[in-house]
Image (cartoon, rainbow, N blue to C red):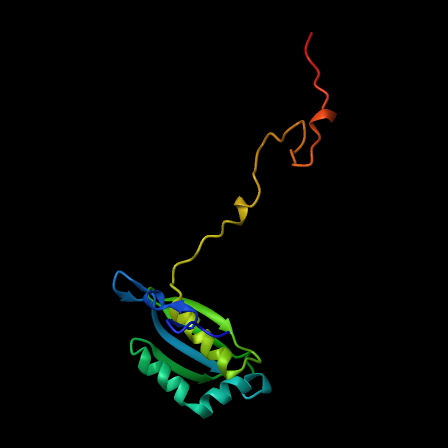
Length: 148
């Protein structure tokens, strides 16, 4: 994935940071990791340090914390305004994937999004007695019974 020159991490510049009524939504990021091999991406990121420091300098409104949690699966917790938390697992992720997760958490809002999956098919209490129309229906094969 290569972002367009006018974008940052796949989002256009005007929409790359989430603010609602002038208030930054993401307040804190906690990167939880352990000493097992599934946290190698976090260790790579911590060795480089430059990427986390660049993220922190670019987003001074966000508190970035790394925390060692022994025997726990590595994950990132984003705390938003109103004490709403979003957790994303980073088990066996590379350093690049973890940085993308940080930006995705920064770019999302704390508001829940509604799903429109229930609009996928028309719903009715009275299904058609004649059946569902399809473009392959043969109009000559339809027999119409008239009342006498």
